[in-house]
Amino acid sequence: MKSPGASPRCRERRGYVLLETIIALTVFAIVVTALAEALHGSLDAANMLRRQSAIRHGLESVLVEAKAKPKREEMAMSYRDEGLGIEFRSELEELKWINRRGRPVKNLYILRVVATDFRTVKLLPDKAELYVYRP
Image (cartoon, rainbow, N blue to C red):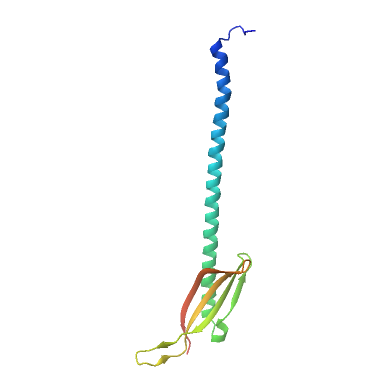
């Protein structure tokens, strides 16, 4: 039975409205998913950069603190940051250097601070070095 004022074209059009709505919702879902992935990627990158910055700051802090120690023996130290999961360790290595006169320069050292991820026991690529002369 036909409805009294509906033409055959109007009935066909109603079927296409449902199909167009489903297609529009599908496109919207794909776009929202892509935007969410992009946002997640940028947040991961920001967190990684924040962690790297904190590691560099820790390296510099341990380097300055170790350099300020009055005795050579006290310069070798370590610091563990539980929040970052990083252990900072300073090492003192004597530098073998010859001056212009051909004599070795004594009491010249390289103060090196290395960072290790103690959760994975992985040495990180960041390190800091400083030349120290302690007569």
